Amino acid sequence: MNDKTETALSSDPTEVRRQKLGQLRETVGDVYPAHFHRTMTNAELAEKYESLEPDTESGDVVTVAGRVYSSRNSGMFMDIHDASGKIQIFSHKDTTPEEARALLPMIDLGDIIGVTGVVRRTKRGELTINAQEIVMLTKTLLPMPEKWHGVADVEIRYRKRHLDIMTNEESKLRFQQRSKIVSGIRRFMENDGFMEVETPMLHSVYGGATAEPFKTHHNTLKLDMYLRIAPELFLKRTLVSGLTDKVFEINRNFRNEGVSTRHNPEFTMMECYWAYADYEDIMDLVERLFAELAVKIHGSTEFAYGDKEISFKGPFRRVPMPDAVKEATGIDFLSIKTDEEARAAARAAGFEVEKDWTWGECLAFIFEEKVEGTLIQPSHVTHFPKDISPFAKEVPGEPRLVERFETYCNTWELGNAFSELNDPEEQRARMVEQLQQAHGRGEKDKQLDDEFLDAIDQGMPPAGGLGIGVDRLIMLLTNAPSIRDVILFPARRAKTD
Image (tube, rainbow, N blue to C red; front, side, top):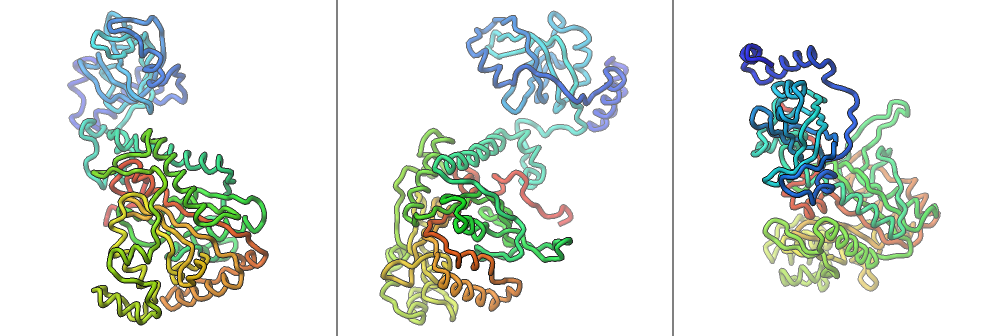
């Protein structure tokens, strides 16, 4: 580009890019080619030439491609990044043909280019390619965010995640780690003998958890349907079938409820069921899984979250919920016999409880108020009230409690597990009671899942079941302050809102 052309360019950065695009189409033709063959990624280059001494030319010719992140001395030095890292490009009259150098004024930050040249290391130790050929692969029409400050506006970071990752190495690393964690969960489960299956995301009857569903309509079947709130009832049917004794699914669930730093209406869970096992077997599985994932990401079972040091080294602390509440408040729920006495004890200790709450609801509420916030290191809280656990087996000798645990860390619930109820008559009775409670709350769409109950009548083996909140676990392992930091494209309000 000559001086006359440069002065004719608009002062609007976007318009400048469009004008350059027009000039490129005239001079080089196809500015968006369908294919470009590179011989190495930037990471492969760095690994192969790690021992190349400073101020040394290798003599090897390579072809790379990437986005231009910085340009110095009118394009003589450029840094281009691919998904694996960066490489410096050097274009000088002594090494780069005039045809290639003529392209430099047309290149803006953010453009994607291909470069062929000789690998060398500069006197300062920077791995560099002496450009022999430069090819425009994608001309960008919008300026890049300023690289060193990145996208500061949180709303823009979530709404335009591509810009966040483009300019924020922490975000890029976090999503690369997310991929490793999800694949690590899958490999762990498979190595442990679990079979992965896929169950429906559209349900004609929603269940498996207590939550408000998203509702849709199936035009062909002329049927109202619901996005899955949990895969539990389908996964249990695979145990009934005899397909496998150990089944799991990494699944997307949808709950039409609130948003917070730890809650998102669309989220990922790993749910599994293990025939002939119980909740204690599942506790061991959780500890082994968490330790393996920590080592995979951090090289150790010890890692930092914020200003806390977390240890995923097993065994985790195990504490029954009534014992935890007694330790925190002095209230001995196991000595309390009736719902009325439980409400009175809670009120006497300063807790506001509803007039119709049961013994178990009072216990669970006080646990949430006084104990949850103290659980920093990973802990299994066991022996939940049966009132709030319709799918778990009773604790022998204590029919008000069930063989259930939740795994907590950093005050968050990360997992929920049961010794699964497989008595078909007891299961039906509890689900009918749960349905009546839902209708009493105004949830008129809630129905009894007769197909699941029919399957249980066929006989399900004793089993341990587990659900892990994958997004929260990733938050913890990647030091993310919000669940939206680990979800690539979280739902956002309309811009007009």
